[in-house]
Amino acid sequence: MQNRFIVVFSLFTFLVSFGQEKISGFSPKDKGRKDVFAIVNEADKKTALFFIDKTSLKVSQFNENMQLIDSLGINFSKKEVNDVIGHSLSKNQYFIYWTGSNSKEIVAQCFDFEAKKTLSHTIPFDKGKEKIINQFTQNNISYIITTTRSSNVLNIYKFVDGKLEKNTADGTGLKFFSDEKLTTFWDMYTESNWMVYRDGLRNISAETTPSLVLSTNKKKTYSIDNKLVFTFDINNNFTQMLTLNLSNFKLSQKLYAKPYTKKDEFQTYDSNSFLINNHLVQIKISSTVLYLSVKDLEGNEIKSIKQEQDTPVAFKNSEIIQEDGSIK
Image 1 (cartoon, rainbow, N blue to C red):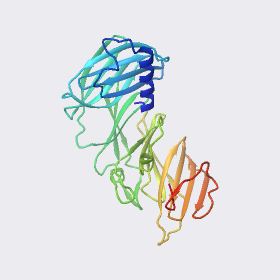
Image 2: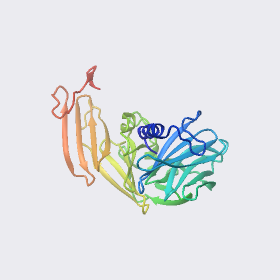
Image 3: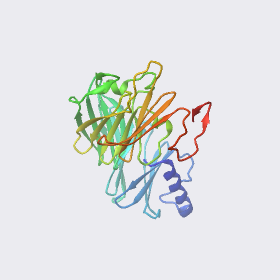
Image 4: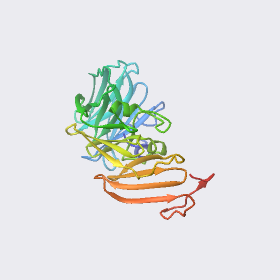
């Protein structure tokens, strides 16, 4: 799904260019609209805007110049569907996937602009004791990732063309660390303490600038090319990176050492990382010193910085605002 800026810009363009025109009796000015999102077809540069209210979902399709091409709609009952969980795209067919009132089913709605029709059907989705740990849409294909307690196995549910495919990625041979001890993927995923203040994963989208809340989480996922990359910073000595290849569903792993610091009973360190432009930025900080390291994905260090308290900041590119003696 696109960010709010794209949605607002698209709606503004729609209202300016086509405010007087109604397709199939629908206008985005209709009252009671609850949700709006967009899907962009990178192949033909067409954009579909989806307008959802309590009883219907209506779609308006635009060309690359934001000229209205067509509209389709479908009615439904909120007793049948709950929340949109993703979408997929095949040529000129748009598929929207909902959680259903039955927890063991997914509702799929198809908007076929070639045949000028809409279809709806249910997909069995009985995950048993599996826990959903991530759901995302990449390259116009939706995925749900699950795992089970005390497990190193990931289950990948792939939604494409209104159908569900299940694949498994086995990480049994990989080593996962919690603090200094070997653990399972499940325990690493669910760990929560005074430093890892939330369990679970936070998705970092390449399409939008993440908030500070997302960026500071110690367990993150990134959608890159045809891969899903997990980073775990629950250990102060290294970042654990787990890469899931979405083409062959293979898992690979790499550890990236964080800046070295001597153990000091009077000094407490915290650390984190962020993945950007195929580089891993790692930070380790205490009340008196900050270490910053930039590495490529092979683990080669490109740049490192050490900044001590009461020392002028040599690497800043803008003014730093301080409040109560700490960097804000």
